Length: 106
Image 1 (cartoon, rainbow, N blue to C red):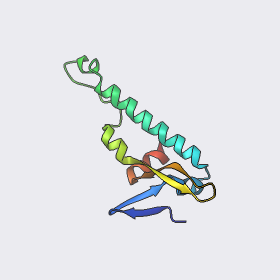
Image 2: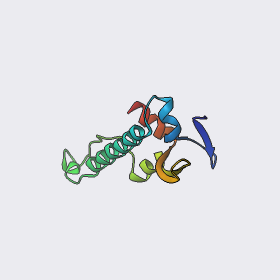
Image 3: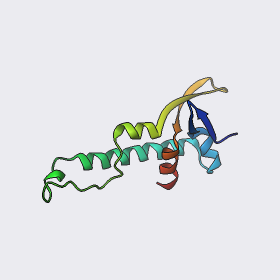
Image 4: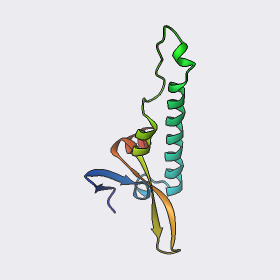
């Protein structure tokens, strides 16, 4: 099973194939991706807080990673896969290089 695939000229990794490569269940990888998304959104909200812009002389401190919601959504692209045994669809994620790096290093 290949860990990476090329789609529309972009190298992507599927959460479904990454899980066994790292000795995890797919549900654990999904949980970790959701946690990473949440963490990045919270940091974005802290950075965008109007109260922080009043600190000092109009300078706003940067606490987070500096990613917008749109960028976060491009790191982890929600997708679905079809399970052949029970004939149901389940959630999976496609990860860009940056998304994969955040997941592994995060």
